[in-house]
Length: 411
Image (cartoon, rainbow, N blue to C red):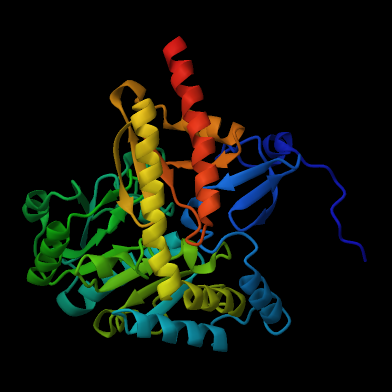
């Protein structure tokens, strides 16, 4: 039976049939290979966005395609009434390669965070009683779109119109230890932080701040939860970013790059914390399904090698060098910052709110890039993007910036 899709769909189809919570580009990609993508018209793009830090091994990675095909011919789904070999192999690898003793699988970063926040409250309930329930997180943080995760996230815009939201959550400024000291207490069950804030503007944690957060958590018997949904799986040049901070969390969440685009997330935890998610306390129908775990295992095997992780550092240098050269030419960036291949370039005051214009102009020139808020250009490409694609993508970014600068001068 020929299943080839014959019905013509366009960007206009989105407005006819989809809920309007997204406002996608007019571009509809239909094929990708490595760090290049082609749309319906056959136009080629260089991908500096990586599906928002997801396609860490590029599009249509041949190894992952083969793993998917092999697993598809064996077993797709069981539910957690039974376990399966890919899930067990992946969990074993994740615990061997990290601080963690136990793993819970989910389908997304938001679900991994939901599990982590529930675990934090349950752990405190089991060990200290119901009064110890407060979660502290940071302004500008982003932890997902469920009602609980937008409440822990430090951006009020994502909660507006969905109140009342879960209570018992406090926020303070990132990298400000004195503010944290002022609000942490014996009622605190967890401090939740990203080792580098992604949606908040690509802001890395100060090493000393991160260490003092760990000390405060120990002092107040609170769990330290690291959200590495965006920074994990090699994105910063180590398998997880916490390794570079000299700090070990109690709980860590990961997703995005873990499946290279196949939906999968994981919560990693110490034995001490994990035991509070006892039988029946939490669950997921799809979490840990064999398809997702087989692919994620292959991703981890490829990423956690000296070649790939060492290559991230080299590519970071190429991107920063290229962005600095563009800045010398156009004077558009106030600061270039980030870790590994999660890079942010903050716009100068005269171009406040104009990062989106660069993204749009970039697409016209054949480049995919991202924003992190209205003022930061964000780059999160494949960890193995070829050097010639970096050079070509930066050349296209040059043209895009020139166009935006000219338009703003004219205005």
